Structure formats: structure tokens, C-alpha cells
Image (cartoon, rainbow, N blue to C red; front, side):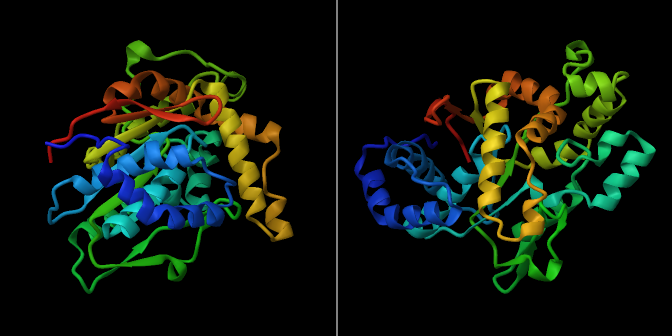
Length: 317
């Protein structure tokens, strides 16, 4: 039976000393400015120690980091993976639900056959869940000499990177990390269904055709994937408004990483980000209300981007 280790104990102190230079290097690589040492010591290192203390087994642990757009789940996953690799000699690989989008052509077909809003990527129904399951199975069954391609998607180009450029992971990992804004979410019941809740839904989906289609999709293959999670961690932000602010910050960070003038033109304005987030508002509000009771570990992030644990579930492997 395992629980979180005290961030002040000798094991965690040594883990931090062994990995701090690598973690600082990742900060520079991600171009996210300075990361508070307190975040590394109080959040990243205890999580790393906890995962590292889990009993080694033949199949990798499949861990999901869930949270609204821009909540910090992908960044946290990258820090934890690096600390596991450098500090505890664990083999990890991670990918995102954003890496398994359906192609633009597939989404255009959905837009023609179901509703025009189906063209917008990100909501349930716009992901290739089978690709995610196939990747998970390949990694879980890999032999030491196997090479598993890891899906990768370009948001500015709105298409997958060429498959011959995908990362190839050699062998079988100890941990597979998966970040997904809706990871672990259950479909909304008829009793909890609400009428159009923002300008986008009122103007472009007044009958709820698109909203109900998303919910039906969530009830399908997404649950097969989500049921494979060994552990679910949620990052809970204060409100829907903070999801928008975080997503806008994410767009600005993306802009800084792009040098191609043509791709820079595809970066969204603040007004475009606001409309984009409306596509996710219904499910995001539901996630903020319901997910804390479903997640094994809950981190809250306040208005100043300070993280703290509010739920630490004991895990029995």
C-alpha cells in the first residue's frame, strides 16, 4: 500500500538535488520562464517519488493527467517524466489526447453529415480513440527490441506530423503518461443536461444536435480508453474564466515557439480564443464539478498559478 511521501523527507530531498539541474533545463526548453522552486519541491518531486515507489510490474502503469485547457497538465507531466528518468532511472513515455485528433478531412465529413461545429477539433468525437488504444497496446506488449511510433499532431497546421517523423520508443516503458482535458470524464446524464449555455451554443447549436452528439461520443470508445487508466490526476482551476485565461496564455506561448511567418498567422487572437473555449465550456464546467470525486489525485491551481494537493488517494497496485 502506497501513499505520498513527505516533501521534506531525505528521499525527496536527494531526488530534488539529483534532478534540479535537469528540471531547470526543461524550463528553458519549454520556454515557460522561471518555474518556482517551491512547485518542483512541493508538487513535482512528491509525485515523482510516489510513482517511483509503485511496485514494478510487467505491464507499464498508465497514468492520466486531466484538467482544463492551459491548466498545466502537460507541463507537469513533462517535469514528472524527466524526474523519473533522471532521478529514479525509470523508462517513461507520454502523449496527449491532442496527438490523436482525427484528420481535418475526417472532421469535415462529420461537419457535413452531423453538424458544422464537428469540424472544430478538441471535443469528444474529434479524436481517433482507436489510434490511442493501439499505441497503448503496442507499448504495453513491446519487446526490448520493439520500436513503437508515438502519434504527434501539429495544431498550427491542423494535421498530424508525417508518420516517419514520429518519435520511436524503444522497448517497453515503466510508465505511460497521457494528458487529456477530458480524461476520465463520464457522459452527462439526461437529468443533468442543460439548455444552450453560451452564445456559441445559442447561435450555432440551438437544438443541441452537436452538444448531444459529443455526449454520445464520450459514452462510447472514450470510456474504453479511460477505463484503462491505473491512476487519474486532475488539476482543478478556480473557474471557467481561468480556463480562458490559461488557454490565452497557452496561445501566446505557442506563438513564441513559432518562427515561420505563415504559421504565426494561424495563432488565434484573444477574441478567437474566447470563442474557441466556448466549444468546451459545457463539458469543462461539468468536469470542474464532477471530476474531483472521480480522480485519485486532485491538485488545485489558484489565480496566481500556485499548486497544492487537495486529494491524495492511497493506491493499491
